[in-house]
Amino acid sequence: MSFLWEYPKLIVELLASQHSSFQMSLIFLLVCVATLAVVLWLVTREETVTLDGSEYVLITGCDSGIGYMLANHLQKGNGRNGVFQVIATCVHPYGKSASQLKSVGIKVVGLDFTKDNIKSFCEQVDELVGSAKLHAVVNNAGVCIMGEFDWFTDDQIDYIFTVNTGAIRLVKCLMARIMSNRTRVINLTSVNGTLAYPGLAIYCSSKYALEGFSDALAMELAKFGVHVIKFRLGDFSNITSIMANQKLHADLMWHNFNEEQRAQYDAYFHAYQRVVMAQAGGLSVTKFNDLMYCFDKALLSVRPRALYISGNAIYLSILWLLTWIPEVWRNGFVAWTFQKAMQSHGVIPPVTFNYTEHNSTTNMNNSKKRHVHRVIP
Image (cartoon, rainbow, N blue to C red):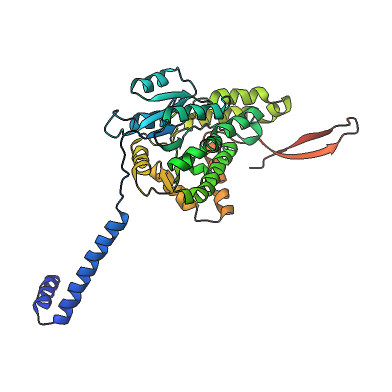
């Protein structure tokens, strides 16, 4: 193996030789690499915006979780990163979380997308901001209920869509100020806004809607110098309250079932809900650090990205790989893994359904009947 030691010696001799053409080529290569490195640094370096401390950031959904943490993170004088005047919306503006936010100088305004008048809320925002600049609107408010689509009540469907797409109505109401202030619009979507998942039909469709809205709005407002930014998030359920009311909603589903549905789903429904509650957050992040870093970039960079992704690295990597396979295979794989995960916990769908509609000879109204077929293992 002694011949291996000859290679360094040969290289040194070669460089020291009179082969000037080789030396010049090597020098030229080194100069090119150095120049490329400088160019890349100039292109990729992030310039930060100049702030005077009077700029406002409006954040929705600050009773808990991401909104609550972000409001505290950004408020001027509250921590090393706080450089903004923050307006935080809370469903419970006199609750414990709201009181804590107020104690550090954050302006708390009540906002419940299912009840409150958006126009009057926007008037409050205009009064608070006054002649200052509204630097950004962070549309964070969101809810999630898990269960098969057939189980949802009409009120639950309306609830999810009203809250999760509330950003659309809010942006519409604030449009004049957004365009004049060049306000950044930051919409929190989800990986489930690009990849559907069983049990999340309503949640996914609301997030798909917000993804599409964000993309179209970005193209429309670019001419006004307005940045529309998406935050596509993974699982944050362990450190937020997004699944906190799952049991309550499951009870409402069961209460709304007719006798036929109860007979058909019965044990499957209850086992399903137990597993959902037990397994929720299995791929959740445990800290807000990376997300807050992304917010700093989106709010402070002169040229923010159109998309920031944050979540469990393994989870996000799997989802990224799934985007590269044909849709029919992807959906089949997701459905299969979900079914296997449920079966591993003893949750096996007892029946499948075919829905047919026919005219009854004894009833003038059309009726729907469910024909039950046992699943063959």
